[in-house]
Amino acid sequence: MHYIYLYFILEAVKNYLNPKHMKTTNQNQATPSLTTEKLYWEMLEVLPPAYQAHNCFMVGEPSDHKNGLPTYACFFSIDDDYYECNTMTISEFKAFMTLSDEEKLENEEEPSDEIALELGLRERFSDVAVDAFIYLFSESQLDEFEDKYEGEFNSDEDFAQNYAESCCDVDFSNLPWPQNCIDWEEAAKEHMQSYTSEKGYYFNCY
Image (cartoon, rainbow, N blue to C red; front, side, top):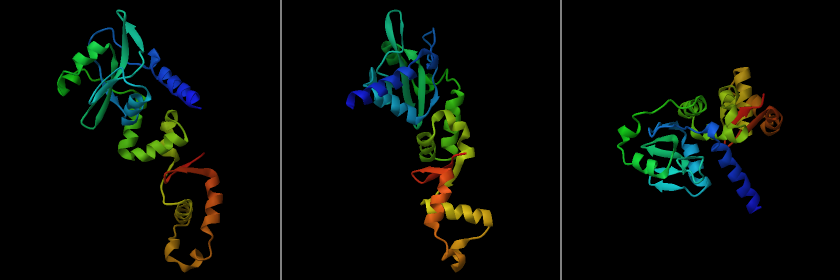
């Protein structure tokens, strides 16, 4: 089982390090762009880094070569922001990291559409809600997040009752009848046939 797990991890890294996904340049000029904290930590933890220093690292598997030397995907953080940089050799990255924060971001580029979308959702909603969506669906479906997101609830029963109240424009919690006559657990089981949840965050499946 250990070898199977390791195989899938390495395949994920290889897919990410595919040149068509990487920021590359033929110059020694670094071109960082914003990325997500989630991706930063995933790439840091998936393999032992080729190089690491407090707030920066190079992914542990080369993505290409330049002048006979391996180049690696590079990541660093400044305050609470996380950045991905074009692939560099270890010596290039070490030199880059001696720059001031302002100098590092001098040639900052706009993030990819996918990263920009995810960063926007995390800012407007919450990291936990976005992570729940990715777990239940996938990062490639994040453009559907707002259509599928139903909200945060304490339980399936709470979600079902909220849905019923929104449809009827009635607050059942303040009404002995029909509140005392409704089996919300059973109602929730049927209601959840069209919905899914993770860590208290609910999404529709249509």
